[in-house]
Length: 256
Image 1 (cartoon, helix red, strand yellow):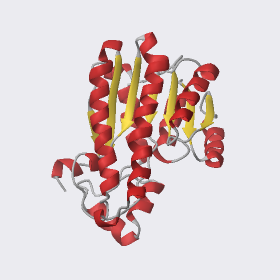
Image 2 (cartoon, one colour; image 1 turned 90 degrees about the horizontal axis):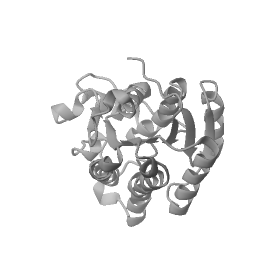
Image 3 (cartoon, one colour; image 1 turned 90 degrees about the vertical axis):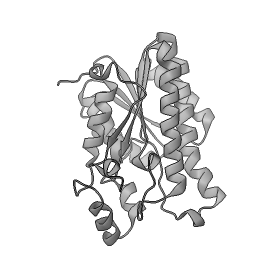
């Protein structure tokens, strides 16, 4: 299947590193103009330089916890790169914590990025660009942690709660915006070889324990998640909306 996005503009949040970076890279390779958004300014500049070798790319530094920045950044993307056809929301944080240790500040920090920021980005992109043109495709990043309880070392109640919110908002967006021909789906990764996963899990011993819980006995590579994202954005998935695509090596199916 040769998926192309020629003539389309995509926003990818959290694209300075990790899965978001690979999503931006794949979209650029497939012909999309890609707006790479991240709060990490220096890292973003390096990543934009690399992905620019694949296609048309611009970087936009933005803080998802500041709602006014979200709407303003979307407007800037539209002005500089054209109307937004595709939105990928990979930005998230996942600090490890036991349920009894989470503070109110910890909770708010995770939810402000993973859930609140994600919603207002969807609102800004659909309101400014997709609804007026009656077209668009969105892929949010949920997690198998938002679908089921997680054993140690992957447990984190505020992360799991925020990803459960992503699942709910994805389904609600799919129902509400279907009349505007906007599709809203999500991917739900399990463990992926990223900096965030490594920092969340901690020691090599805990990583080995996490891998042992996966039926395929390995973590996903970032490109394996990005492949699912690109499919859901494409016309090959034109009748798919409100779907949560698990990409986890069978962990959710096994029930851990």
